[in-house]
Image (cartoon, rainbow, N blue to C red; front, side):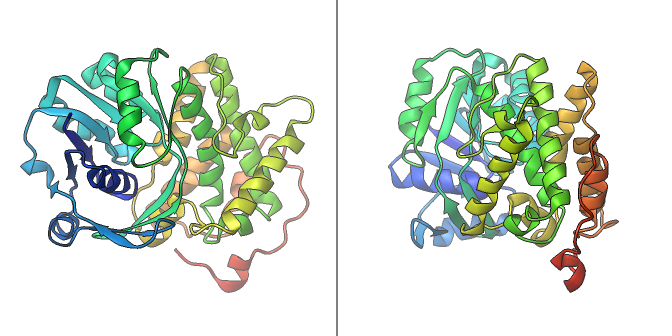
Amino acid sequence: MARITVIGAGAIGGTVGAFLTQAGYDVLLVDVVPEHVRIMNTEGLRITGIRGDRRYPVRAVLPEELREPLEVVLLCVKGHFTEAAMERYAPLLAPDGYVVSLQNGLNEEIIARSVGPERTVGAFVHFGADYLEPGLIRLATERPIVLGELDGTLTPRLRELQAILSHAMPVELTTNIWGYLWGKLVYGAVAFVVSTVDAPVAEVLADPRARLAARIAGAEVVRVAQAQGIRLEQIGAFDPTAFAEGPGWQERAEAVLDRLAEEMRYSLKPHMGIWMDLRVKRRKTEVDMQCGAVVARGERLGIPTPVNAATVRVVHEIEDGRREMGWSNLDELAAAAPDARIAVPRPGPGERDGARL
């Protein structure tokens, strides 16, 4: 049985690692937070939420305690830490070892540059979980993990991984992993827009400024994806192809945003993980690895992405403490849209209640 090393024992890595350990696999969790590692080793990793409330006995180490060779690596760090993680862990990878990116963004490109595409496996992850404090994770939603080789082939190791990871979440295989990753970037563009306000997603999406900015941000991602010949895949109930411009596209995009708002309204997780980073944890988000990656690729292809660029700027200012999370941010994002003809927006609850970062 292959040894599994989970790099980053936060919301995604901790959840997957705990469930695989429970299933009997040889799993080692690696995390940079000493208290998190200590509690996991002494008390177990507690996971609450839709599967109940229990502690899972796991093994965990700090990065400096990790020893080679690493066989199956599940990389679960935030996207902006991917390059540093590969510098540290790639030399520890066994000759026949490989890295699976359980992350948001296009991190497979970074991993492949480090260890080669033949030792990189792509993955689309969309289940909802939050790292609340050391030793505690909340699982809010269950969604399939989709696995794919970067060249679109179906290989024996994909089927082996499918069998392993199915103990954590349902697992599907695809010949179009890039379609899932870029589809998730459409979702991410919407998620970052709504997360500039300190309010639940459903409440933010009731504002016409948010609707306009989210719709155009999604459309920009679709344009960049189409220019590369990427066929977008469905992201759960979220259909990124609805943001492909053409006859009736705005109504289709609005319907997708309606479904997203309704889904989030009744979820154990009514905010995006981005909101958690900005409002609760006060830490850097993955905006550069998602919206920023779209902007950079658009520049290379000659495709304007003004709303995504504005989103990157606004989120950076919130991260740096130079801007508050508030409804007025939607004015700037909506104004970046080429077609900003919307009704005069009503004051948002955040303006009345004085929402603060």
